[in-house]
Image 1 (tube, rainbow, N blue to C red):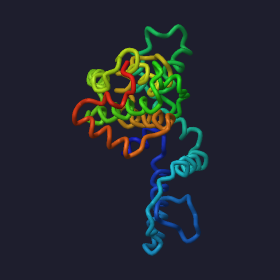
Image 2: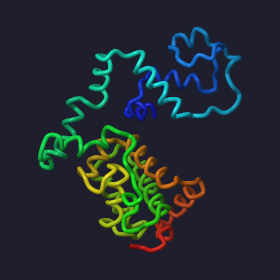
Image 3: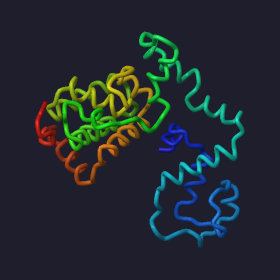
Image 4: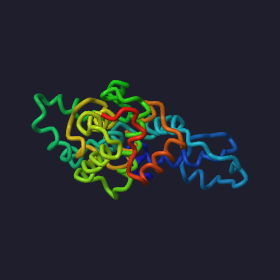
Length: 245
């Protein structure tokens, strides 16, 4: 959804610019232009017939150009405040860290995952109790599917989903499910309360972190996704784990 791109720190003008480039080329091959300019100069004969490719690296580059060339430092400061560095967002985090902080600098160490997209993953972090990378992927993708059923993420419902996940795979909740999810969402073995963290991150950003962890572990094929969906109907995915723990 568009809220995902907003929450991930993309500027609306840059995103619109990027979307207009998909399947369309300007006469002068110009890549950065306002929406008003696009509408004014629009030529339907320049619409491409081949399928459009969503190039994330291109979007990142465009967004960077907008930040550098279209924003003053004061504009950037105001956008950062509106994005995450505001009282409303910090007030959601404070109950999770108040009793965990020894110094004020502990705040960023606890909540770095709230502000960055690319976490410092490792196989050791994402494969607790020596489960395989493939098994970890199956578990993470299934958890993502469970979260998708919620209209809005709530800590209580998320906790129930983690126990459902353990039951589906017939694996240990404390020794496998929780360490794996902490690693995928926070990029560490332990941290602020996981369920409340997911609620604050909301569905789009939580999904993005789970997909990043899955990509780190090698990704997942459409065939494997279909297998998960089929086994979910019987509410038994234990066959996807070679040795139950």
